[in-house]
Structures are given as C-alpha cells and as structure tokens.
Image 1 (spheres, one colour):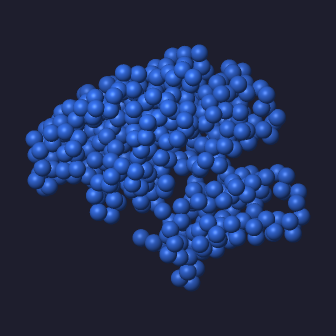
Image 2 (cartoon, one colour; image 1 turned 135 degrees about the vertical axis):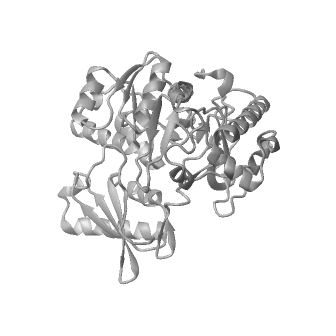
Image 3 (cartoon, one colour; image 1 turned 60 degrees about the vertical axis):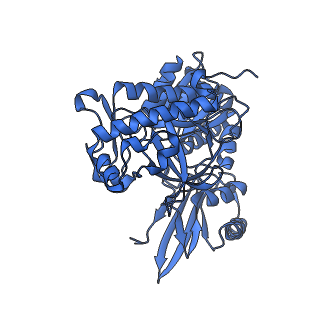
Length: 434
C-alpha cells in the first residue's frame, strides 16, 4: 500500500540527519533556556553544568531533570521563557494532585503542536476528504484543541463536539457522516455501547478513531474496533510538552512514533536516574527541542515504557514507544504486590466482561483489601443468582492467577457505575498511605 505522511521531510528523515538536527536544536535550546529561565539556570548551576558542556544529543545526560514537583514549585510563571506579551494561550492539566500544571504557548508553539496532531491523523489514514468528530474535552484540557487544530491543518471538516451529550454525538455522527472519531478510549467504548444498544451500527460511517489521554489495553482496542467497525489508533502526549501528538501510531499499530524533530526521548532507571540502553524498560523522559514559551529539558513523565528503533514498514524513521506499561508513581502496591489496573482490565475483557469497572482499595484492620466492581452485560443480567456467583468465582480465580493476590469481585447492574464522558475514574484508593 502507498504510505502517506503530513510532513515526509521530517517523518522519513534518514536517522543520521535526524540526529544531527536534534543535536543542533538541543544546543540552541539549552542556551535559550539557560538565558531565559532562571529556575532551570539555578538547577544547571547547582549541578555545575554550563550550556557549552552540551555539544549534541550525546551530552543530554549531563543536564538536570525536571519533575512535576518542579512545575508546581515554579507555578505559575517560574518556567516561562518568553515575555507574556509573546504568549497567546495556556492549557492546563486536570490537577488531580496539588497545584494545577499550567503550560504556556506562543503562536509558533501552537502551530508546531497542531502539525504533530496532523501527522497523527494522516498516519491513521486521514485526509481533507474526512469528517473528524472531536469529542475530547475543550477548554483547558489539551485533547480537544490539539486534535481540532490538527484536523484543520489536514483540511478535514472538523466537528468540535467536546465530550458529553451522547445523543447529540450520535446524531451528528449519522447526519454528517463522520469518518474519524477522536476521544478518550473509555468514551469511545461508551459511544460504541450506546450505538450497539440502539442498533445503529449500519448508520455509522466511521473508519478510524484516535484515542488517548488514558491507559487502555489491546483487548479494549479490539472491542471498540469490532463494535464500531473501525481501526483504533493510539496517541500520546502531555500538557507539559504541548498535549496529544508527542507520539502517535501508524497503520502497523506496534508502538507510537515519537515526533523526534520536536522531542528527544530517553529511558531512565526511575530509582537512580541512569540512562538505560535502547530496548530497556524504564521511565520515559522528554526534552522539548522547539518550544518557545514553555521549553522543558529532561522532563520526567513517570510513564514506564520501552523504546524501539526497529525499522517500521510505514517508512517513518522516528523511534517508537510502547504504550505506557503503568507508571513509576501510580502503581498500586497491595499487600506488598505491585498491581497495575491494566492487568485487571485484561482479565475482565478476556472473560467477556465490559470495560466498565472500578477498583476500590482500602485498608481494614491493617490489611489491604481489593474490591473490583464490574458491570454485567445486559445478557448476564438475566442469569440466575447461582450462575452469577459462578462467574464471580471464575473472575476471582483468574485475577488471583494474574496478580498473585485475592480480589473480591462484585458483578453489578448494567450502567450502575457512574460514567465519565472524559477520563474514567478507574481506581479509588481509600488507604491513607501518605
């Protein structure tokens, strides 16, 4: 098949040229940050590093890391590299812990961010013939504005729906014959469920979806693909670096290509900070090479993944990252065992359950408890009590084998777990661990 790219000159750049471009941009960016961001200059001075010590990407390891704690400490303007008169927008994270993270953008920053999102749409088969329905949240959240801008750049007809109002989403999807759906995976699963319940599958013209902003498993991907009759692509990003479009999947769906002309990726040991060789599993660290207003050097994402330079059949030379395999900071430790919510989701979907579940962790009499509420499918709801308790027992056994610890599984009525039309709240940890 013929491969299409939004910016082939970068996306298929020979590796040696790409590394030379990264080195040139890094040297310039380090000097720029040192000159304009006092907070980072102090960190460099404390570490005894001068801009002249960084002559290329091979010297990146010499620079100090930045973490979310630094962003909170420097809030709101401490990491800003341009005068406010040059900035045209902020975006912000949802701020689930502590102070919100606020990122600043010049018009140039927005243009480059939208280019990255346009690359993702084209990699998923999008063109100016498509109708792109954007159901990520707009406003401070980066999902809506990022994919909206990317869709404009590609020349697609853009439906800026935002999240929620499912009836209207489905009506527009039918009436305007949307071909692309952009939203969180949990909302895509919810839309798919609603479309199937109404028997409208044959009136939906979707061919692809770009789903990101939360963790999802391969099982969930296949479930959404099958229900909506589409190919579902992953996209990754962080508000701190711009938003979605830091990396994206091509038709191979074997990891996400990182836009390496704009971001350098490293994998480090989360405990020691040591840079690990390619192919190692560790924490993902990013350096932004082209950001003007809010340029972060060696930002620790806390996402655990693996990078691969294995050549890709799509022709892109950008390194690929796996889906995040959990995080170095929000992994649940239950009765001394490391538990990732994605492991639980895999078991549930493999046993024919829906992707609507909630994990509740508590501590009773100094011992951790793990309860998992799982919504039944409408068909199961008619089963006998004994058939349901048998199903709970099967799920308990499968989870014990996956996690190594016992979980209490409760099958609950369809639609009884509160739906989030943005990010799903999968985990409720009631223990007071901090």
